[in-house]
Image (cartoon, rainbow, N blue to C red; front, side):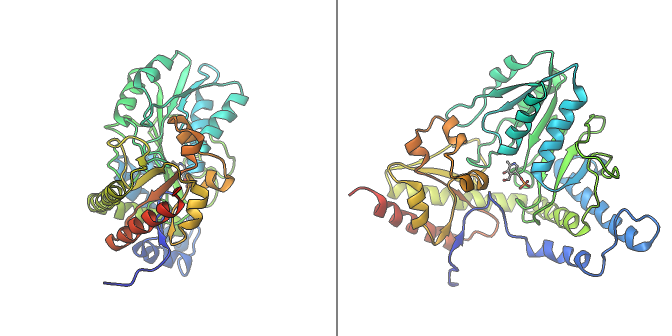
Length: 383
Ligand SMILES: Cc1ncc(COP(=O)(O)O)c(C=O)c1O
């Protein structure tokens, strides 16, 4: 049995380590192959451009789109901003209504709040105790002024998977654009932009064992998006600025690996996470899984340990790296708005932690984590 390296990383929703296979592909573009991909007069530029073309196709392949429909960005935050604001602006002023959900990532909610300041109206859909939106509420919220629906695929805090296919059907039948923030879903679960009627999809590199600072946005051919940044007009005019070949190649390779390994990754992650949940449920009587038990990506376990305060608890858990919610909101020490929308009390929210399991997680690590969490919960529980 190999020796365990502590602390154990269990925060795969915040970020993931770069897969060594990805780094290998990136290295030449950080050293000898330094050309500007937008230089059209010489071989340095052509080589960089060719590598980016391959990466674009690798990303498109994961979601059943074509290369021309994929633009590179700095990450899902930027993709969400471009998609939501850009698509809403393109239909304005004829249409000025956008629909999203209350449990979206902060960067989606911040984008829609910006739209509100500019005169748009936004409907924020509720979620039920499982974290799922009500599809009838979605249908009833649509008006002739609605231009865009933005609903995430997998939630970053609780792992819940919305019914993307049905949402896509509703949007298609009402001629409304459908954007999905797939930062936590792309490369982890099967997604097909055509089967699911998705018009815009946001993707992040560092959630799929690729580098940080790179993402992508799928924009269906024919969908009009107004650029929110001016410049040289790269990326179909939607995202000006010189691309980083190393980062693009990294995201491309990470996408290719994610697609090839999706079935085995998903099987492994689900097995480990179910086993952790089973052990905790068996040994502790105060543990509760937040969000739907069935409609979820199992690499994310958001658990409430009733009666245990999570900030003290997380401090206790120094041998395992977990979080109290999203990386952004945990940095602000604000109670999770996502758990609040699920109807958890303030006390239960503060007793909740997110455990993220990923490609590199081993059985030994899960064994250790289970025993360790049980010990810490016992220490923190009133005797
Ligand atoms: C659902 C979701 N959307 C958007 C983002 C932002 O992604 P990025 O770090 O690539 O900007 C994240 C990352 O935390 C996320 O989990």
